[in-house]
Image 1 (cartoon, each protein chain N blue to C red):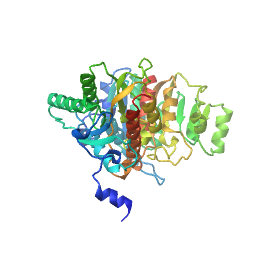
Image 2 (cartoon, chains in turn cyan, blue):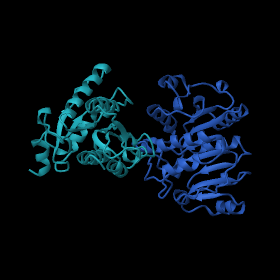
Image 3 (cartoon, rainbow over the protein chains, first blue to last red):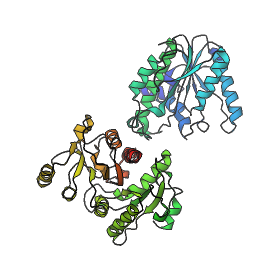
Image 4 (cartoon, helix red, strand yellow):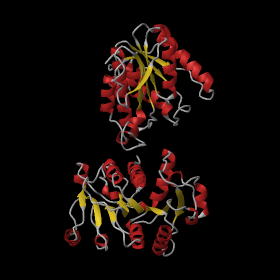
Length: 224
Length: 256
């Protein structure tokens, strides 16, 4: 039996093949990668909730920072927005309180909003949400805590299985922006892509995986 | 358009309400589908383009920069060519710009027949003799490959302006002599098949979709009629050709 068969049957699929863990396993400075299964609350588009699952299944081990851990999915309540936001903020806050950093993967931009709220709550500071697809804010110092917004809808149409716009960023540009955006990244959200769940979506899935890897590397570094 | 088709769709192209020409106000657009099919050629499917474009604008939530009505699809059972010519004339008389979603190239010829005295901006890979022979000079966009000698003689003798696909992709569109009022004909085969497969013609080394959008969007022209032909949506499962058509049309409407 070859390696690919081992990967398919012997392991629980996890983001970038990192170990699967729980809140109790987290220590200061670790990177918690968390799935977000909700795509009906902010810039809704059905299918975005499947990105986390798609990236877990497409992942291969050995490409993530050593301290990264797959924490599973946050509990969501898509039909009860108030309960949903308070629950997601509380769960993300509990992770940040351990000193770990978060990548929230999948869903719509409501995950980013909740993550921003949690970061503000825990740090007590005015944490900026900085998008990698907009012009890089020069007034942010490298030690200022920020939440990185990685909206995969900003990818150019040619990278997508179901393009919604012709022009946009390439994955390489996104990765370069992830590494050069100023600020100390304490959390990031990778969202906005409804992946095709067949072979047609392999290109966008690989692009999203490379972007996720860059985000974890940036979180490990903190500052650019 | 028959009632069954109307019932199938909630809104028309770009969210425009379905309606009649009489409901269009001066300055509006009237969007008309003309689902004709090419009589020959291996790549069929242009007749599916009008409804595919409506469906995709619905999925994308495309907003048009101008108001108007979607007039549905033209009934092609009789002498539709004359009917189309009359409809375009009627709309222009009421100061309503026509947007025609083809269909094959015969759709554009019927539209041009209704507007004989306006110049045409023709985005197509091979220059056509019947368009070059019009009284007013044509501006050719995205020419690619070997051109018919007699047509090229006309273009040269009458000093018509033209750009090749390669020139445009390299950014040499700046000095095109675009008139203040004109008709725009976009044959989607002007796009390179490798970027957008949903077209009737095979055009290797044609224009990139984003180049087409930016070139048309940069033309400061009041379009009296816009015709899109040669789109074969079922040949492109990703929808890039439809997306290119929709974005080009929006870019043209923003200016015109």
